[in-house]
Image 1: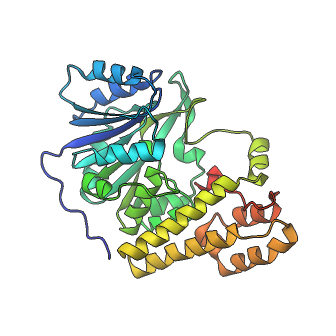
Image 2 (image 1 turned 90 degrees about the vertical axis):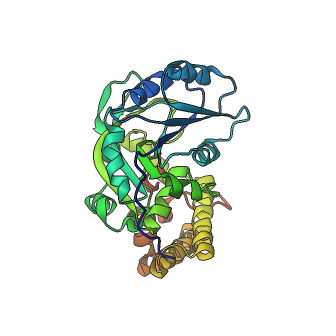
Length: 342
């Protein structure tokens, strides 16, 4: 099915935040303070806490004690992990709009106010972010710049064929993202192989209902304990990593493509053309996962995938093709994938 245009948001709009934490004591106070300082009020915070103790929860409870924000605490003393923690938190929200939130960032005061109007037209809005260090000092770069977003990708994410971008790599970062509540809750739980932001972005792209707002409305903190996200590295380290085997990530990408293909086939989500593109993604990742270990043996299927155009529609083009040829593969392991393909 082709998703209809989102219905009008109710007025007044109830705004929820899905905030997931793990040992967040170092930075959570800055994040909560920035939420309390929003120019438009937030009505609900669902706190999914994976910490082994209540330190993070106590800080949040104390800061919200005198506020009008409804706090829903979802403690997980046996940690769920990022994917399942966000699945649980999103499912537990009640808002018309849900802002996804990490524990260690800071929001610009007008973040909610700037994003909210765009959600009257689409299911998912994401933005750029300014990178800061562990002390909160600017690193003089932005998230999209660190991810090396190209002009055609930015154009399609702003108002075009977002699926063409996401088939190659994910550029939607959860900490910058807001979604329609009914859309997001219906998309839970996040299936195997996916992270919450990737999954929501893919579904919104299938609905032609994703938009990049190219403003820096989040201060995205980079520090040693980031679980996911952009990390700066030297050219030498990046080059060595590109050629190193990573069978676990290869398996994740295969599972992700297969689960997406199964989902769109079962639900008939998206147009026939878009479902065919998801099926092509699954075929491409399956071919890559089955390539032989030796370079000479795997060169023919690599070249066949290159001639078919699938490296350019479903991967990073020549970057991925050359890496598949040059990388050192472990016996029985598939080709590696790296954060640049995220």
